[in-house]
Image 1 (cartoon, rainbow, N blue to C red):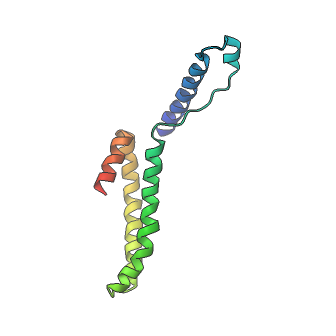
Image 2: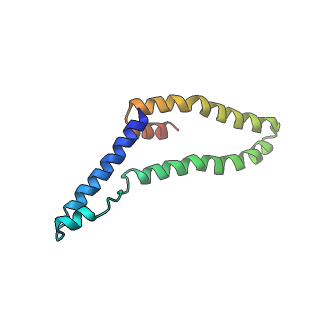
Image 3: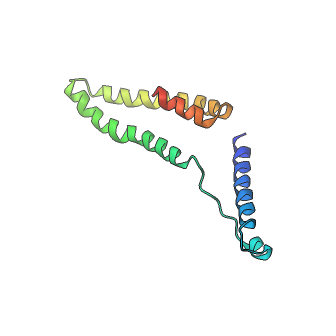
Length: 118
């Protein structure tokens, strides 16, 4: 499952860096073998950080402005709790479904399709 793929990714990163360390021009084989393998930065890290930013942006910008907006619309204060509760409940129900889809399909395609739908 997920953890086996994760271990495989880590091992492939370590293998890639050790191969790259052994192929450095100007070094002999003794110096190359003594070099510590280093992990390279994952390619999708910038996209992941952007998605996490968007996820926290919804709580950081929408929630503080929601209560004054409801007050301006003269809605009961109970609606604020209902909106927050409905959002959290929907997230709790959909998160395992999206996790199962992520295991089945490519992560980047699923991520882009979720962002496009929202």
